[in-house]
Length: 133
Image 1 (spheres, helix red, strand yellow):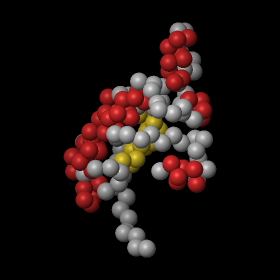
Image 2 (tube, helix red, strand yellow):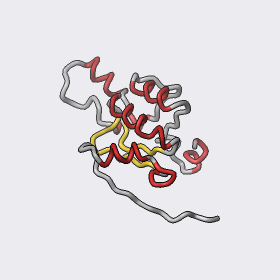
Image 3 (tube, one colour):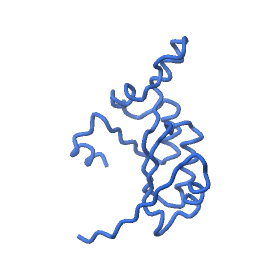
């Protein structure tokens, strides 16, 4: 993943975290990261701009990371667990795009059921043809 980010010229914008989703997400929610986050993440997330008088809380918010998009491509049986953790930790911005691979085959029925029956998400299924190289 890091090589792809570098090749795309996005190493100053994208931060690749290595570890289990539980470990990485809990660390990000706590404001911890193994490497410094790119400057753009803290500037563009909109946290800490107005609405509070407490400078210490504002500084804490500026360091807090949230996601405008997440992509799941790990074990489909773990998708819902990961999504619920993101929600519980407050890491999803309003209007966040949640994309997941392999939800139809081999399938992620529990994840799909949750999304389809939740009033928090609007759903779109995109089917693609297999690519042969």
